Length: 315
Ligand code: SF4
Ligand code: SF4
Image 1 (tube, rainbow, N blue to C red):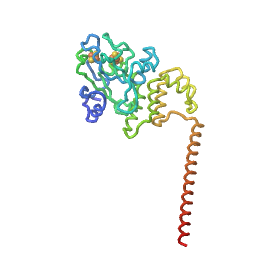
Image 2: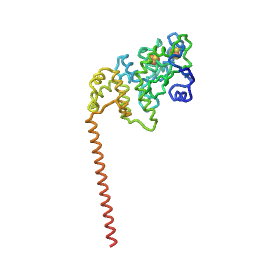
Image 3: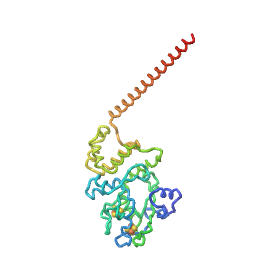
Image 4: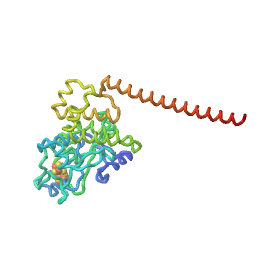
């Protein structure tokens, strides 16, 4: 794809994000496009961008950061994050809680980021953004994606001499791996977003989404210690994987959420549960029918009484 300017529709989409569109350079880039940029402790603005910033965490970010800090998910969530909504939907998520005194990220020091190898996805993208016009990355067709540069006015990294292709930059920052890990979660948010404001999520659905996407320990307890396995048929291999492997559990949580929130395929409900549900619905329908019949008979009797009374008067 040759480099070209952003279309009106594309500019509008950027304007709907949390990013300031005026910081986006209006040129489409490909993986082979070049950029000149370097960030290192020698730049005069070093760590400036780790202050007064909104860093929304993905489920994979939370998993990696809490492992890096050696603490359980619930402790990480309480200590280092605050609630937010994802992509202007009613889906609850978390963002990094900045320090009250400095407005800085809790992981920044004058020497740099203390969790650098495990830093969140959002910290890896700057200054190369990616637009994917297939909703939530539902199709990997390369022609639907393009890249662009975000240039914060205070950022001196653009004055450095180091040159990269977009491909090299993304590989260096570990962005490709993050994109892969984040795409199913992003797809859920984009699906929700596509419903607009006409439909809202129930409180129970929000609680489930929050638990499954921020606290995999609790989600694992939910699977193995509630009636979950009496409802869903999960094969032994998957059960073995999700019992031990957090990444496998995260992918499973995306599958479960897609099923429970949007009715997506990929989860099998036990036959006896379906039969139970059908029986319950039928019983409810039978009861409703009986009640309607009863009401009809009572109305008819009242009308007959009324007619008889009228006939009596006329005779
Ligand atoms: S503002 Fe730019 S150069 Fe400065 S620390 Fe942030 S990314 Fe690096
Ligand atoms: S996690 Fe690291 S890179 Fe990201 S804002 Fe905090 S200190 Fe900066």
